[in-house]
Length: 421
Image (cartoon, rainbow, N blue to C red; front, side, top):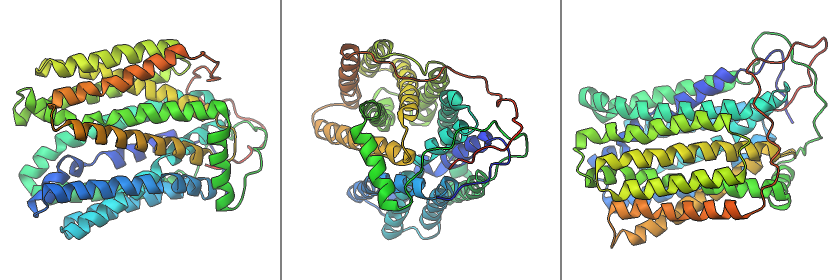
């Protein structure tokens, strides 16, 4: 399996930059409007969303095995390039066919990133003896993601006003294109002291089928890993309720122009929750259950108020949810011990897609009789059930190392053992 050079410390800043470039997408806020402006009907838009979802679902685990078989920085570069190509198709050749092709490329890019970024980050830190910093660093990645999405929503309005939908498209193309060399740079370590040597990792399988089998076996057959996979999948999948928040805001009487500003509340809460999660990576099931129970109750209460002020409760839920997601991801990464980390992480991503699909189908059926407020409040039910499940099960040790300072360990006198990242 190819190994990158290890001439200096792992450059975490490039991970932040890559995340920001691939999430700061003004087109994301208006792509549905772009498509309908070219004659795409509501029914056809639903078909396009289905293409997007199915592509991500089908590619999730196979792409994780790719990231265990080939250098992960190249897989991330391919993900950004796929995204960039899809946006270019939408902007330069707007039609139903190009929209469908763009969603396939975007779905493939999402699947290629899922599992790959977390694994590259964990192994990059672990190779230098800094695995205990993973939760803190991943929480900052989550905060960068939330802030980038919020900033892209704000940037979309002036771009549309002055350049129309094409302006949002070309800016998104440029940003994702810049992410390609950023990802490739992750394969080159920064100049600096060589980290302390670590024991050589266990031999990894060299064929793609062997990597895939190893990852699936660990996700299914190791109890601690399986438990972490299920928790991460549930928490990530339940976050899709944010798709209904713009409708809820309008239903609550918020003027259309003020909806993006109101939606900044949950996004800001997610950023803050990400930072909190990095400091609470060792949180046990009991405390996590209490937090999820309070968050689910806040979500239901906030949605059912029928007023914009209810978004304070929804923001509280998203603070808890992002915190819990960071905790679950840290548990998962520290639990994985086999040679197929990205594959195992992608299994959790596949589970998240399944949970999200179940939420969409359930709320889609209920939408015939219920308002957006009721639909969002219904999402609190599985959150509360998950809280009960965590409260009732035995609270085992999760073996999450305590947070460590950001500084790398003192340089050693000999070279470091190279690790796959």
